Picture 1 (cartoon, rainbow, N blue to C red):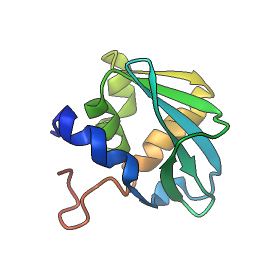
Picture 2: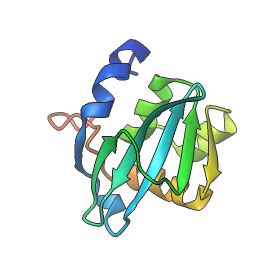
Picture 3: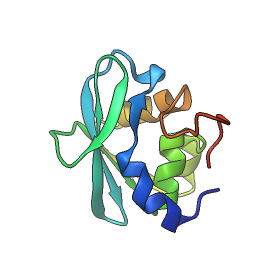
Picture 4: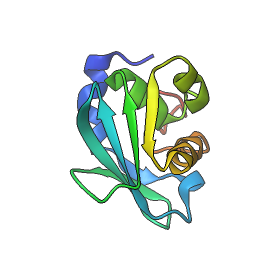
Length: 118
């Protein structure tokens, strides 16, 4: 598991391909502890990156940076996180879940050498 302090800085600079998101073109806002942490930009090709702003169709709010990074890496099931009260959705909840499940299929936030979170 990643410590919150380690996850706060690096996650926002990651970009790459998320195969499970190919075909989508949208923005999803991420909030950590009720503050905007960034906006996930998803391109039709499946390329994803964090940007400062964008017209978001969905909002994913989490309790901590650690939870956010675990969701981005696809190693925290979104339904489990929701049931545990770690995450909530606003706007298009179906899209938010589709994005999180798509990241479980492959995510640029996973360490490439090991395929596992750092």
